[in-house]
Length: 114
Length: 118
Image (cartoon, rainbow over all chains, first blue to last red; front, side, top):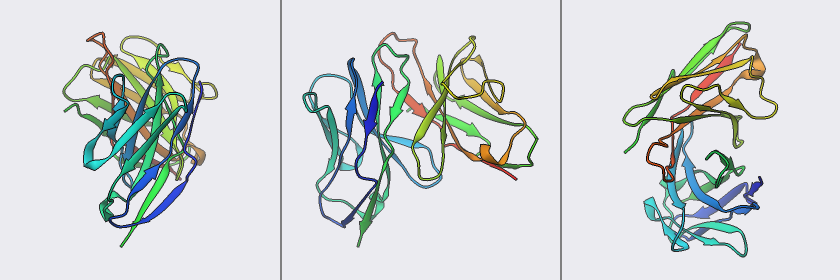
């Protein structure tokens, strides 16, 4: 493995605007894909995951992500953000047959401004 | 839903002492537990993987004699930081996975433990 790249370290956006957080990965085997959110001094909360099937995955809090195998991407989107969405977002990959451990991206801080 | 707890949530200790962090799965059997370390404003780095009843598998660069991991039961894993030094100060997060069903099972993360070594 393989790596997970979150190109944007911080994404500022105004409240009620749409947002996309980018995630690209590299792997030579099939993968499971995840997005987690982390609020200050807290653990990780699962937003959504792609295991198989439909490439468009819907998660909690109005987030969705689309798996694009040809582009090895799993970008996270929300059509209208709230102040409460301000947090750190991590993309993670779990490679099949590799013990189910995760490789995390470096995270993207979403900063929602009023 | 599946819940993973960690204790303590934060700890401050003197340099040279040892600190034990507990990770418990409250409502499922955690056949595998993972320990991560997170430095400020950085991502989670996997330290080790432990399967119940087996020795932990450490990632490259992680000192197994310094970070002792025990996974003696299906609901409890412990991480002991021995002879802690200020550079060990970090946020430690565990996760747990129930592998008994045979199919893919997601990991559930604990809330983390903030370790500060003076």
